[in-house]
Amino acid sequence: MAIFASGMKTKASDILKYTIGALIAGALLWLALRNVQWKLVVEGLEHCKWGFILLMLAANLASLALRTIRWRLLVKPVAPGERPGTIFNAYCIGNMFNSLLPGSGELIRCGFIRSSEASYQKVLGTVLTERIWDAISIVVLVIIALLAGSGEFASFCHQRIWMPMANGFSTKWWIIPAALLLIAVLVVLFKRFKARSAFLQKVGHFFSGLWDGFLSFRNMEGKGTFLLLTIGIWGLYWFGMHCVLWAMPELCHLQATDSLMLTAVGNLASVVPAPGSIGAYHFLIAAAISQIYNATWETGLLYAVLNHEPILISHLILGTVCYILEKASKKRNGRSSVKKD
Image (cartoon, rainbow, N blue to C red; front, side, top):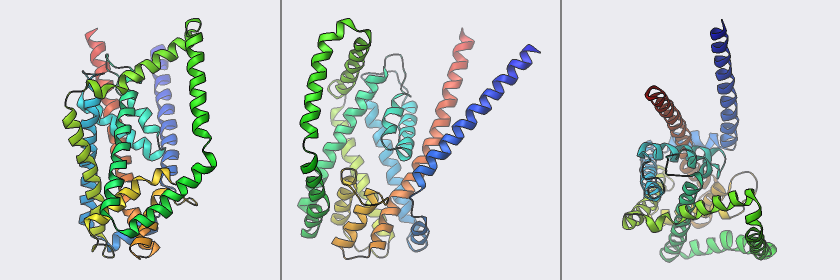
């Protein structure tokens, strides 16, 4: 009877755990999809060429594969024994959480890289390195787009991107020197009191591991491969943006330089304020298409939706599948280790 009661308690606990998990996932899913322009999606799919949308999704999947390989190169110096499958699953799970709550995926995916050699902070350091390379890539992409683009594109960047950023900085310029001063004070206090505080010693250990992970590029094998993968990732992103131009009869006449400009605009969306709840990406893409190419605002918004929402949905599906696979894999490994003991 005791064993039966214990089993019932375990089942009830599992049911409660999975129910709470499902409710949380449902709430996050609603947050991710609440602003989707579903009417535009339906109208766009009725008139666009489906094959090019599928080609865009294939390019995105190929880009995801390259990103996984690139991250594995960074992770290998700090976790040489980690399975490629785990790294892929972790990256897809991170993308899923980024779709639900931007920025959270970078923290969550590090928790799935738990080989004996790696610490969480070291893996987080590799993510920081990866994001710095992405930031450099965006700067290079914008410079190339400005050199290859039209005068209308340069004017748009000045009016819609540079001026809002400059105006925002002019009123909040004090944040940077204040942050630098705060960091300097914290470093001085940390060095002075570290020896007296176990908590500060743990903080120091965390940042030491983070720095080791950040320097993973220095100890990485295949730096040339890393750079080629980076070029391939952004090339596929550009190609995917052009696929959606091909898919829309109103925009299929645009050239590769036009999709390059739109790629640059889309990647600058995260640093530019946008009005209302439309979202910076959708707002900037729609504004660029309507201003540079004299198209309607609805056409520009539809282009943004067809670029963004299918990828969002694919990340949610793929991340969910990878999460289930990773949990099942760890459960099997746990059973194997118990049997060996």
